[in-house]
Amino acid sequence: MSLRYLSARVAQQIDDELMSAAGAYSLDQLMELAGQACAVALARVYDRTRYPRVLVCCGPGNQGGDGLVAARHLGLFGYKPSVFLPKPGSKEIYKRLKTQCDNMQIPTTSDLGSLKTALESSDVIMDAIFGFSFKPPVRAPFDEVLPLLARSKLPIVSVDIPSGWDVEDGRPSDPLPGPGATGSSGEKKVDALDPDVLISLTAPKEGVWEYRGRHFLGGRFVPKSLEEKFGLNLPEYPGTDLIVELPTAPENTVKL
Amino acid sequence: MSLRYLSARVAQQIDDELMSAAGAYSLDQLMELAGQACAVALARVYDRTRYPRVLVCCGPGNQGGDGLVAARHLGLFGYKPSVFLPKPGSKEIYKRLKTQCDNMQIPTTSDLGSLKTALESSDVIMDAIFGFSFKPPVRAPFDEVLPLLARSKLPIVSVDIPSGWDVEDGRPSDPLPGPGATGSSGEKKVDALDPDVLISLTAPKEGVWEYRGRHFLGGRFVPKSLEEKFGLNLPEYPGTDLIVELPTAPENTVKL
Image 1: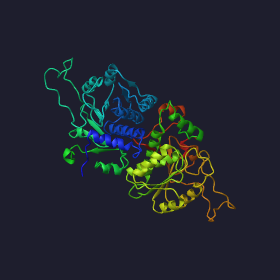
Image 2: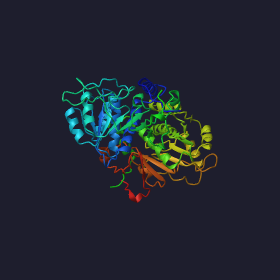
Image 3: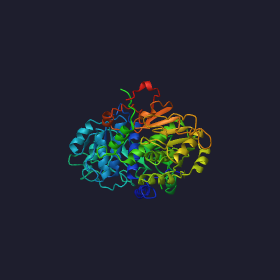
Image 4: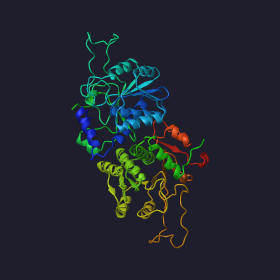
């Protein structure tokens, strides 16, 4: 019985079911538990004494909400998080999560200029830009954000799916040499991040099948009945831990 | 700088402030984090291999909501929880939390007869009956519930305030011998529980000043600014832990 890697469609089905009248979870609950797990995963790898300054980069959707929750928990864990949020989501929950960060004195920036400054004074990046509903291509302003993050050479912790990767097909190939393969500055275009750490939520997505960095699973909220219905075969979380590290060798798993 | 023990009024003020427009927390978020901390505290003391069967006794208010969240997390941690919920709260959130327990196949009972049966097949009790808004006397059906729990001799983990204790004045004295001091069965009346473990949420309440069992603090969601405004002087939580154990000696603390 092997861990199931999810298509975008099945990931969405599971989310919908968790938040249906039958599943009864609220978005507030699931986002709180997901973002908390992301913060714990980062802390597991990047010690707050050596990597205190975490730049949490948030997208406009639920993934960005997870990032805002993670930033707050990182602050509570004693890190010095800051948030880059160029396109705040419009849902009321994102406004509340942003206010909660404000109340924690977590600074937020939104323009590319301040992103460059923030990168110079950060120790690690949390990539909460795109989640399992991402469809290429990478749109503005994130087409300029991803290259800045990649070129910073800072360690990256990606949430659920590394930003720029296809949710099912994985990392896009580097462009072939020739016109269009380099940006206006002449540098090679970067359309995808290569994270050092990945935290998959609920279950990993098909696109990270060949991901080879440290890989954690979080989102300890799936009832056994739902796990069985979708054949997830989740690994056992140790004790009361909110995350569990996955083996990176794909031979331990089966792609359905 | 000593940990502050809260009056009922100040505890309510802090809750109100956390959930105000300025605090921006939702009840869903705070209840999730509170109940999760309760589950972690129980698991810290009562190992799931020796104490798998947890009877979570829920009151009709927010305290009962914390209990329902704790029951779900205990199920996810591998315990075999069951819920005793004689007076379900009417708020929509309690219905959702109850459904989440149903989805985890956590059995719920509500009458005194099944409580007796449940006690015979339980290893530890979580007391989530009364919280910091409790005012004596203990009303039906809980006036019959507390004696049953106390006489079971099972270990008890109380949430925030041991049920039957005054939030500010602490444990009520045992009744003097004489008429009214014994119930209809002739046994001594029990109006208050004596828990082995206490998990205080946000900050301890004045009434547990002289509590002498193992005492944990949970609710790692208080922004520093709010902590300072109310002079809470919270202890540092270790690492990413959701709870911190408090020293039981009152000489380490100052009652304000």
